[in-house]
Length: 165
Image (cartoon, rainbow, N blue to C red; front, side):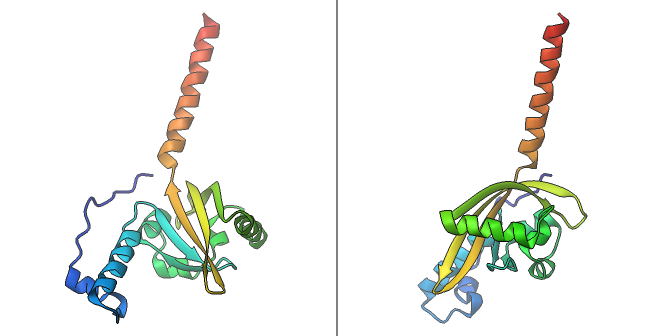
């Protein structure tokens, strides 16, 4: 699946300075707004979630890749979006992440239409005081997966051709 990406994002600095009701100086508010815009328009999906798996935040690319809107995603858990995902599966991945600090895996995401999208996921555990959260960066690898399958098929055909003479 190929998702169209906008090449440019335009932000009005005066509007950005009031981003999220920022009560700090204009410079701090602009910096916060730049961070927010960078995450919202990132080329990869970004998802923040609780240790129990409940989704707290998703960016625009997450909605594009999954086909779910933000409210639908926030009503779900991470393991609801993974084929054969279960609370036990998720808890084991969380423990792996706690041990190593990060987690990398290849899996599929279940889209709203029921189709599966191959993705690479990198998750980092983030602590805010005594609260822990997961921050996942999710990359669509469907093009790469398709190209790899085509390469394997071409190699098989070449081998058959050599055997045939």
